[in-house]
Image (tube, rainbow, N blue to C red; front, side):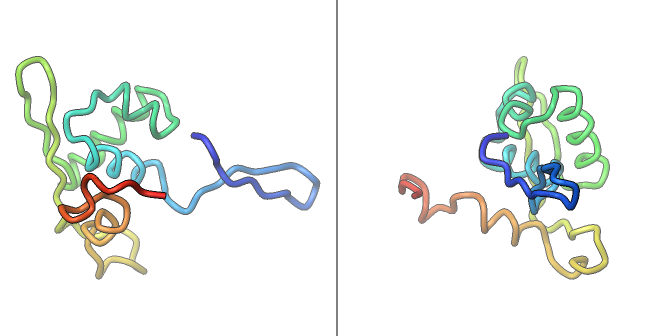
Length: 113
């Protein structure tokens, strides 16, 4: 994943970290391109294809995603009404996250800087 933040640890080592989990990154990648191949999602997120498959399985099992077979491809539908799993954010829906990071109808075609 390009541009990942690094922090110097107490012993001088550096650690990579981000505010969003790989599950959130996969969900956002699919929300942006519902017909994307998992290989492409994995590349965008910076995980292996197998990890992307496992994450999608988790998201499907919990009702955040629905997969539909269209010909030889999968098409995904994101459930924006799903709630965050952590107790600190359980009162919020994932649609709030999607609204922050995916273009809405008014944003489509607008270049982001």
